[in-house]
Image 1 (cartoon, helix red, strand yellow):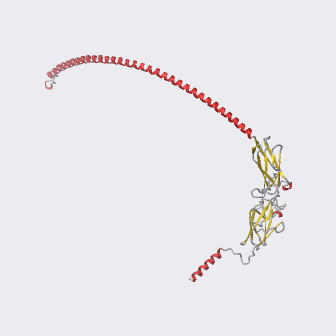
Image 2: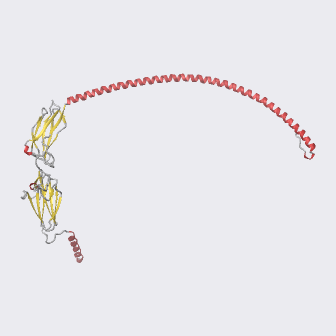
Image 3: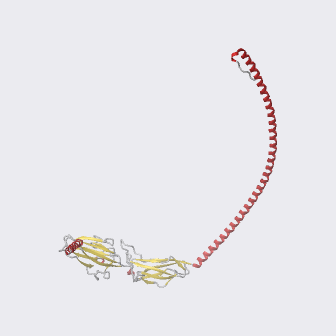
Length: 391
């Protein structure tokens, strides 16, 4: 039994060793050095809470100040792979002769050290969401975290109702984002109403910093009662909070948007609806009256046609009855005439038959006499071949 247990343990050990990835005995464990713009990052970057802060490349060039430089020291002749989520990786920084833009990076990159012992990568991000960077070499895996800090405001976008009732209070939301769409909090926005387009509760508002209001400034506008529309323009309270110029290859600035709200006169709209309803009702009543008249006319015409048809039918029936009586009388007369003709024909036929019978009898008697006379002559001449006489 003990021998069997030893064999089983040996088999399990062998199988376990076969599934483990073990670095060579003389392999050096990878070490990684992190710098941003030549200096160690302010935080370690080894957890979400200590993610390395990186400015987004809002000038559309990936420079030393925008990127986390990763230098991995490993064995000669090995490869280092870096994989990123919510971040991008490049092998070199921007240079006039070899531009590196915000669209240049990839999600993974592998570098072979060749005869050297180091591999260098640069990681940048365009989002303020936390990103991960995973560095791998010969079974060693190290994970770091980065998080972008938004650039200056590049776009103010407005959300406002299309219309509202005169005198009512409406909410207009203005969202501040950088050139990559990251929302920006704690920045002041100024609103200005054109002409008599209503009254603002406050002319400035600050973009929120909470989860529900992050990057959004809200304004309350009371719509006018003497105008058909309200036009409100928005801008940054402090110009330096926004991008100073459009950047080639990135979204153009929108820093002076406006909201246009149509002002509805509900009383006038109600009267218009009531007038339209009254007109529609009058039209329907006129249509009903016309329909009723048409129905009455149609009924009268139908009644007359029915009466005319009945009268014509009654007259035709009387005529037919008289014709039937005449036909009956004619039929009786014809029958009497036919019966007489038949009787006369029968009497004539009887006399004719009697004459034919008498004629036939006389002819037959003559034939008998002639035959017998001839037979007698024959018999006299031919006594041996006599012919019988007809009696």
